[in-house]
Length: 341
Image (cartoon, rainbow, N blue to C red; front, side):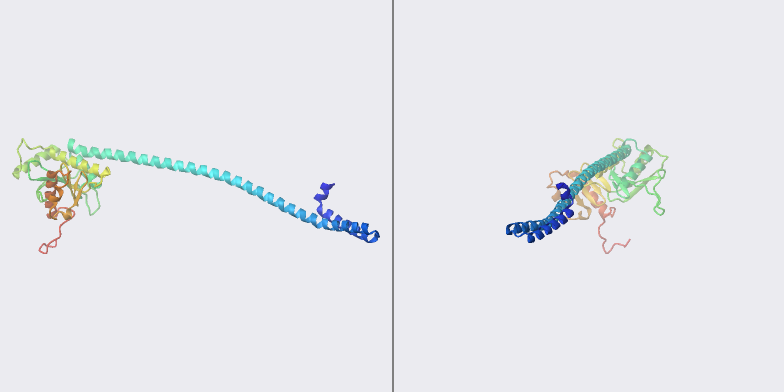
């Protein structure tokens, strides 16, 4: 009965008001003051019970609403935590896949670079071990593409002579932007220390290395530069070219402090002439060609404990001759008397 009354508070409140009114009415008809006062108090209590019952119900409803809201919040927090855990797992999986993909990409690039390096090394090695028209073409075009040698080519010293052998870089037709063809003639030129051409030798694809080296020997004889059969080492020019290309390739691809690019000539065992610098391969010291006419370079460099003086002296004098003859990429300023061409 009490539970029913608490569940039906509006009926309980209405009954309490009616009963209170009845008790108050009866209090006026009772002559005994004590009973009259008691009935007044009872009627008043019944009147007050109604708003208290309704107000209590309102408070209970507010508490119920708060509890329901709290339960909903807790439920949402649980769902959010579960979703966050799921997202964290997905992010971790995605990061793992990205890392794996990045590692696989790095491995693939490393493998391809290693394979390319091996092919390049073989091309440069073939020049010294199996020189031919095609091996020279492949080595020079690849070296030029990688920027290892100057745009025009590079040269080596012909032992026991004052001459150099310049290997011209094969070139196609620049007007139509055509690449060089491997069957076209290759050109080697004999030149002096300053780069002035003395003789030119054409190497057709029908000739082998022996034919070219014989032609070279005959040109040296005609120039009174042939050292004699006992000193003439015909294959050394190709061995020296191989050494130049391999040195430049190792430096450019090995993370050197001063990588070799646009090489013109190697003066073993330490110094290299490029189109713009004199560079010591160890420890990577560089002298800009534009500063080569400054005084006291020999005195300054002789203080270096690591210096190979003979190699430096040869490279310095050779680079200075090439620079003054305007055979390098950087050139001295023209005087007023020079023609404008």
